[in-house]
Image (cartoon, rainbow, N blue to C red; front, top):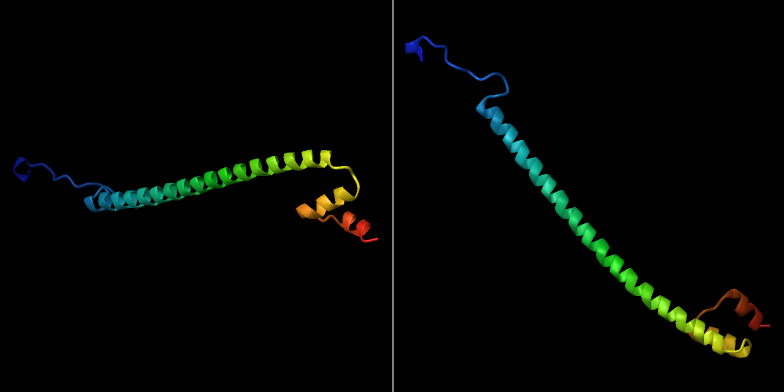
Length: 102
């Protein structure tokens, strides 16, 4: 270049090879951090899906139990048999306990 009387090219501030390498390393670090965050979010969402499935299963079981209990209550006459049933299945409202103990 000097033979042609040309001025050698020098990159401006921030465009040197070292600057580009530094920015590239920052980009790779950011990409890695983002990938980890996405992975953690996927794990969290999978756990939430599992919990939702468990909840739905338990809700179906509870609905079936309530339906059976409601049908059983309709069959039982309201009196001593009703209170026996309440204590048998383990529901102890204060009202029942207070009135039965008298």
